[in-house]
Length: 145
Figure 1: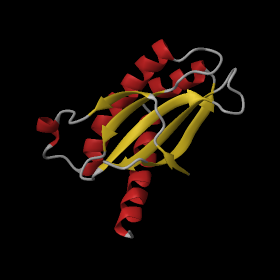
Figure 2: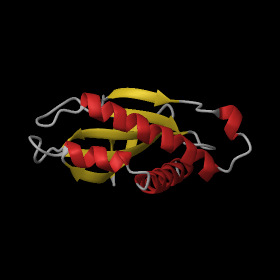
Figure 3: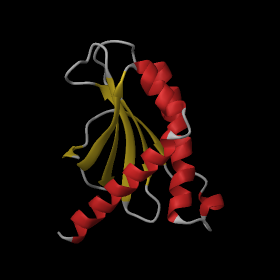
């Protein structure tokens, strides 16, 4: 787990996705619905904006974590150790209004491997799980302040 200020990535935001259709759903169902859309958007953006090789500015897709004051991000960036060939996918969560980001890398690979991961519906469970765990950690941090 990494705790750092929020980096400046080219960001897209999914705020209030389908609120009217999610009102009677549990937190987990809401998060699954949102992450499905975010995962698809991350795939589309990575396909267009992530180069095969070399450093790049990075991209992120943000979304509110249901029933919390937290915002999560799916972040795609170049690998710091081997930027020529590898990319990373991370999940980050921060409290709205804060610049303290708690994040965790979930995949390191080539652009092709990143795209395959994001396209695969099975990756959704991992993204939901990590975003939920990080959000719980952010809530715990702020409850102890």
